[in-house]
Image (spheres, each protein chain N blue to C red):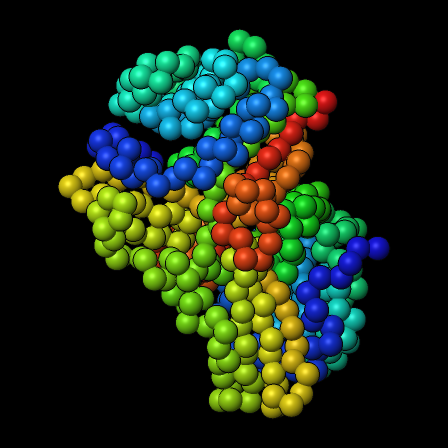
Length: 230
Length: 242
């Protein structure tokens, strides 16, 4: 199973147009970072461009998709900011200089299918961070009611698509009309805690939203900030 | 002393009625015990529903542990009636210790899901790995959270056992938890409450890897059919490298 079909790149800007709430959250973390800032799955630069503008520094952006990186390059140029864009797999992350902040917005860690893929990413992130450096990401909490309602149903917004769930594989496929599939493998809070644990990171905060509200029973988004022990 | 998990102790009197309809797992665990050499250990042995037929059909001793004293009392009676060799110990599975390395440790009936956090589950897996002999096996079953079933059951009371038992289910997605309140013999009685923290396939894989165990088989049911997209039960057989 591939987690990303390049045909999705053509509709990505429309697909992500309504997602803006995460930008101030990641910008704020970048402002607090005293050292290199790295975005995993940088995509078209939707978050990295405002982050680079806010911190007035180069942001390193990693993505496995050449089509998305081409969009990011154009967006960075148009915005007049420096992005150091690198085509690569986040499971192979390697930096020349330890990072103060690695972040991964928009549920992109869920593109990693298995425990082994995620564990490797977490270990690479931990190795890439300086002591005291942070790793931040967000991911949805699996809600049975949403899955029961949307499985197999077509939706018009933001781009016509259908969601197909495979719960045995904890996977949802987003299938765009006219081609382009993106797959997400959801994780429980316990799995995230396990990944943090095995990578030797510590939980700094678990928020229930980008406004830093505490995570509670009503939350449906995990917004994690982890830290490498100093 | 760790906080007890499970909430089964107060339930011992009604547990047999509640679990009486569950039988499909017994031949599976019996079969594993028959094909595995060495000491047999059941985690969360409860009232001996599985351990008794395992001991009977293998002719071997089963060590059964549980953290609920009243469940163990009931198990003791049933073991004596059956005349089988089951040694019962009051213990928390997170603190599992065995006298002799086990050939098979098994944990039926979603019981690992009574452990709330990653740390609890990881500790159990590590203890199990330490308790196994090289080549020894760890087997357990756990539900796959099915969204259609969960949506149907959430907030609803459902009858079991011809209406003698009613279950009231609530799901908490943020905590990957399902709370089950079971009313036996009427809604005027205090229900028995348990919580299960469901896990995904990748979470189980993480626990195995962290404990240094290997997947031998992932089945989708107790007849050992392969796990596939339609499966709604994880039936795991793991192995300590030999």
